Amino acid sequence: MCGIVGYIGNRDSKEVLIEGLKKLEYRGYDSAGIAVFTNNGLEIRKSKGRIAMLEDKLKSEPIEGTVGIGHTRWATHGKPSDVNSHPHTDNSSKFSVVHNGIVENYLDLKDELGAKGHVFVSETDTEVISHLIADEYDGDIVSAVQRAVKRMRGAYALGVLTEYEPTKLVAVRFASPLVIGIGENENFIGSDIPAILEYTRNVYILNDGEMAVLTRSGVELMTTSGDIISKEIFHVDWDLVTAEKAGFDHFMLKEIHEQPKAYRDTMLGRISDDGKSVELKEIGMTTEQIRGISRIHIVACGTAFHAGLVGKTVIESLARIPVETDVASEYRYRSPIITPDTLVIVVSQSGETADTLAALREAKRNGARVLAITNVVGSSVARDADDVITTWAGPEIAVASTKGYSSQLIAFYLLGLYLAQERGTVEEAKVAEIVAAMNKLPDQVESILEQANVFKGVAESMSKHDNLFFIGRGLDFAVAQEGSLKLKEISYIHSEAYAAGELKHGTLALIEDGVPVIALVTQEDLYEKTLSNIKEVKARGAHVLGVANAGYEGEVMKSVDEVFSIPRTLPLLTPALSVVPLQLLSYYASLARGNDVDKPRNLAKSVTVE
Ligand code: M6R
Image 1 (cartoon, rainbow, N blue to C red):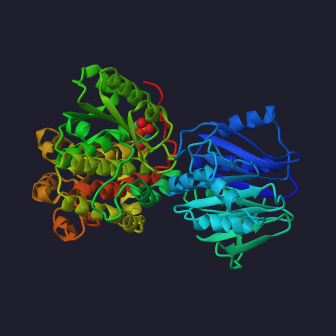
Image 2: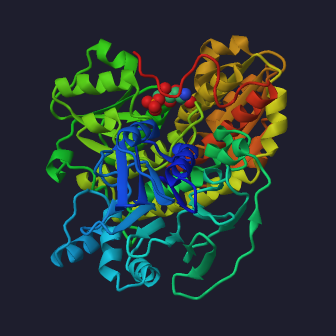
């Protein structure tokens, strides 16, 4: 996920571009750059790091001009660096491109263009686009872009400039967002409306396969096949703060709703076309090395640790390797048994958590191979690990992790299947069955989200209590722990998560009239046992909300006060669904208590101290 902007008009374009990029920084912030037509031709300034670094560079190396494009990057292909930053150009430096998306066939295109003499300087897929457009150019930039995109597979929103036609800015979209802002004697492009809202409220929203040719005096819209189209102007009537949250009241709610996309993006390109195997090309271990793993340690903090609890069950049941899951801040101090055939998996959304990083380094010092699951390309964890599985959830801004957690679950499912394939512990048919069920998860999450409002009322009554319990068995217990943390951190209600069968060994003493208990009942083989535990709390006056699989809600309702059903999936995959109602309950409970949902007290998004 990256952000792009573009401007053609009479203002100093760099001011417009920089302001636009700042609004898009939530889409990525590991590097930034702009390209501007100056008196010397097309000039580029770009820099690794935040936009502030680019601003510093522009002070020492100023550029001026009234037409330009800009980009803020969230690295996918190639680590964050000056050379991998956008805008990219071709060998003649006459073309410049900013891109949001992924060109899946970029390696094939790169080989082909390389054979024709094109020389590439970066590791990015985007650089290939600028070469491709240059290669297709025969005096008309619009048709060159049309021919180029026909050859590209994947997702793209592009802003394109060429020195040969300095009065045009070309924009094109497929599967990545792009809007066109209409001004007076000036026009704009942006990955989303906030990037241009300061200058205009009149926009065209491009659909897939559509493009726009912007000049100072107008915007021509067409399809990538060249058919001229007309569109209604969309008048924006909301303010900037709302817009950055895409209409949601809080980043957390937005991020909860982004989970279907995070699931799809994390699976993209990692499942074979026939759906019978998982392909994790990013793992450099040979089959022999994978077969030689004798134990796995999963190490992480907070929510990522809870994902690791699910990961343990997933890997043990599929790949039959013994797994221990540890809190990173404890790991180093318990003298863990780490041997060269130990695989240590560190999990960190931000990739910058100090405890996790310290545990990673300890594992490496002891000779273990380290695999990281992280959401941030180029983060410290990603850089230090031997292998990295990136979760493509996009930047997570709310302190409470939601899509970060659930995309880590997807990464564990992929990893568990991959290890199992390599070790020969699962049949191809089983892999195909799990993969088919995984492919359904995004739509199933969407169906839960459609009922988000149902949780408001329940959460409001929960918010009046000071103590609450989550219970479940097996994977339900793992999810219960995540639900409990989420509730605590943003609603400030004290809650505990218990293995449902463990209550009777002490905690049951805390259950009295009206105490809310959230019971997860999604593991069908443990179903009857969990229902018995629910009856134990009901008998002591608890008010129980059950989370059950569709088809079982009637039966569960006999033992609880309220029930919420989640779509049916394989038992191993239920955490990817059952966590969503718990996230929504926490969100609405926090709201009901009037808390700052996105920035809860005492906490920070990235914890870089031990
Ligand atoms: O960035 P990380 O995944 O390493 O962060 C770990 C924890 O600090 C984080 O999950 C924290 O528990 C969240 N605020 C929970 O919502």
